[in-house]
Length: 403
Image (cartoon, rainbow, N blue to C red; front, top):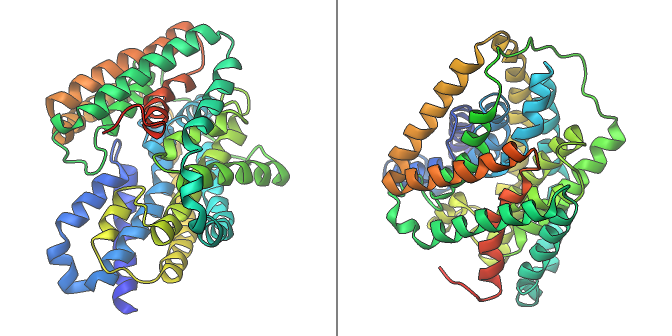
């Protein structure tokens, strides 16, 4: 037990570090821990390493909210939430954005525990019957999202363009260096579509004065958004081939990130953490590895499901309190030169993608950035860019393409 707790503390610290560094994916740190396992296991055992991995996963989910709000570089869990977070930041309400998303994360864990246990008990025996609905489900979701757009034709074109880029990138992802771990090609794809493209078209004015008075949602609205996000997290956490990025598309069919900014932030946070909880249940229930953390866990002899679930819940409470404390530091960004900040972050992300994915990753990053700038130039929603993930998953689940 002592070694498990030491591992959990290490995971919490790693989650804070990786969460506050722009562009670092959870899979990147999981890959680093896996590479260091020959040194970690003799000290902490496989139980300690397993605890570090699962706590890091939930810790980064909380702390990356600060990075995505002020730097605009998304992880798979913050792909679309950077947009309403930026909008609130430009109103001087960046701390409110962080607190709303963190509250959603906490509720996602709380609601995700009974949901994951239910999925573990009910879905595991009928998994073969569940798998086939992934493709039709995503077709329905994206169809609703596109039809609801002000310009469905442009939205469909952007969806197809980003989808083709996703198909190309996943098909030839072996050309990337892969230092970011499992699915490292997601780094340039998401950073280009939802990170650099936003930075290049954003204002270069100084960051407005940041102030916080209260979160602008009633308790009932918070619970409603959290429940919707948890359901989205359940769907993408259990259905094969989906990721937290897919949950953004599911949430958008309920909450528009342009109209219901605060509800969207709560729902997106809940989906991210509920997906982590359900992903753990899927690992133990049907032996599915949904991310780099679960892939590394599969190579170990991890503790039982209840132990890691308890550790994840406890870590989420601690990470939530740390995130609230750090969110108060956003006032330091007040008056910061926007051009300097954007240029620095853009340069760092390009450098990071180059180091982790090589020349092929930089090529994908350039293509993704070009496509990601189109919605901003046309003043339409960016959610159609989620085709980069959803189209490959749809075609794969229908047996049309393989990887």
